[in-house]
Amino acid sequence: MHYIFVINGREDKRWIADEVDRQIRQLGSSLDYEIYTTTGAGDGTRFTRIYCDLHPNARVCFVACGGTGTLNEVASGLAGFKGKSLALLAFGTTNDFTKNFPDRDFTSLQRILSGTPRQIDLIQVNDNYAINVVNIGFDAVVASAANRMIEMGHPKQAYRFGIFRALLTARFNRIRVVADGKRMNLSRMLLCTVSNGGYCGGEFHCAPRADVSDNLAEVCLIRPMLLISFLGILPIYRRGEHLDRRAVQHHFNYRQAQHVEVHSRDLIDLSLDGEIVSGHDFKIDVLPGEIQFILPSIVTMKKRFEPIIDKCGEIIDYLMSSPDIPKDEALQFKIRLSIEEAVENVVRYAYDGGLGWIEVGTELDPDGVMLTILLRDAGVPFNPLEREDPDITLSADDRQIGGLGIFLCKQMMDHIEYKYEDGCNVLLMKKKVA
Image (cartoon, rainbow, N blue to C red; front, top):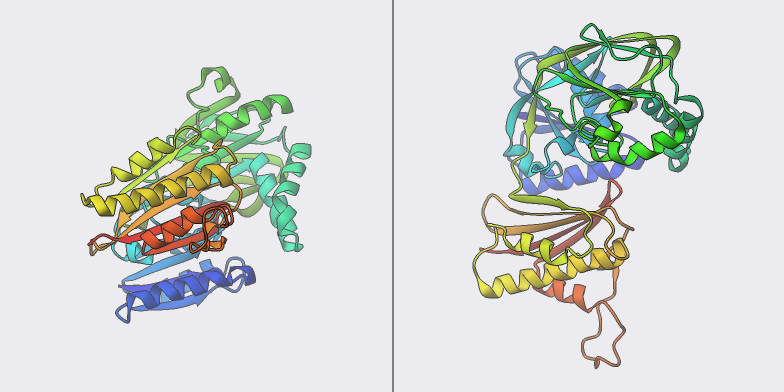
C-alpha cells in the first residue's frame, strides 16, 4: 500500500508536518509514502482528484493530516473513485468526525497502519461534499462569519463574532427544508443539520442516532424560538438528549432521509464540515458506502466521566481494571500511585473542584511491551511537567510546597508526555509492562 499524507499547509499548522515526520521516522524505512502540503483552500481536493485520475489502478491510502476541513477536502477528492482509501491523523482544532469512533486512536500512525477498512457514506450537496455534517441556518451563519474573521487575521475573536452575528441575524431564517419529499417546516427555521456523523461544532451531539454506514442522513430541524428558549434547550442539544426529552421535543423536527432539498429566496450559506457554499437551492444526497475509511486499531479501554467530582476513586478503579495491566503487585503499585496523582491534579487544577469531565483509557502497543495511560480533560490549561522538581535532599519543612506527586510519577513511569490540543489537556503516561 502506498500512503500519501495530505497536510494542512497553513503557517500556524506547521507543527503538524513535524509530528507526521516524527511518527514516520519512528516506523523506520519500511513505509512506502509521500507527503503533499496544501497551498490553500480546496487544494487538498484538487490534488486528490488529479492523483486518482493519473493513477486509476494504484492501491493508495490518502491520510488527511489536520482537522475536519482537511478531512473534508481529501474525502471530497475521493468521491467517485473506487479502490482508494482514506485515513485520518487528527491534529486539527476540531475533529468532530473522530467522535463517532470513541474507542479508536486517530493520533497514532502506527494504529492507522494496523487498522481495518470500513465503507462509510458521503453526503453530496450539489457539486460539493461533506463527510460529517451539513449545517443550515444559525450554525452556518456562525461558521461563515467566523471564517471571514479568520481571513481578516482575527482568529481568536472569530467564533465569538460568528455567534454574535448569528444571534442578531439568524434566528428566524426563511429557509424551507424537504426530506424525502416531506416538508420539515413551513417557511422559517432556526437551524437544521443533515448529518452523517453525530457531532458538530466541537461539542454538540447534534445527531445522537447517526450511523456513518447506514445509507441515511439524520435530519434535525429546530423551529424558530425566542432567545431565552434557545438558551434553555442549548445544553440539552449539546449533550444529544433533544430527541428523547419530551419537554423539548416540540422545538424539533427529526427524520432520517436519503434525499434532502433546501430552498430559500435569500442567498444563504451552508456549512459543509466547516467549508462554506452559497446559493438559493441545494440538493443533498447520501452516497452509500462511497468512501473506504481506515479505522485505527482499537484502544483497549476508554471511558468518559462527567462530572468528576467525588469520582476520583471510581476513575482510578476503572483504569486499574484494565486487562493491559499485569497482575504484578509491585508494578500495579507504581501504576496506581501515578494514576492517583494525575487524576487528583485534574480535579485540583484543571477544574478547581471537579465540576467537569475527564476521559481516561489504556492501550498496549502491538508488541505487548509498553502500556499507555491516557487522561484528557477540557479544564484550564495546566502542564504538570512544567513544575520544577522538588529538592528531596531538604527536609519536609524546608521544601517548597507541591510538586512531589508529579516528581514521583516521573520516577515510577518510563515516560510522561503532556500536550494541549482541541481545547483539552492531554496527559500520556507510559510504562513498560513486559
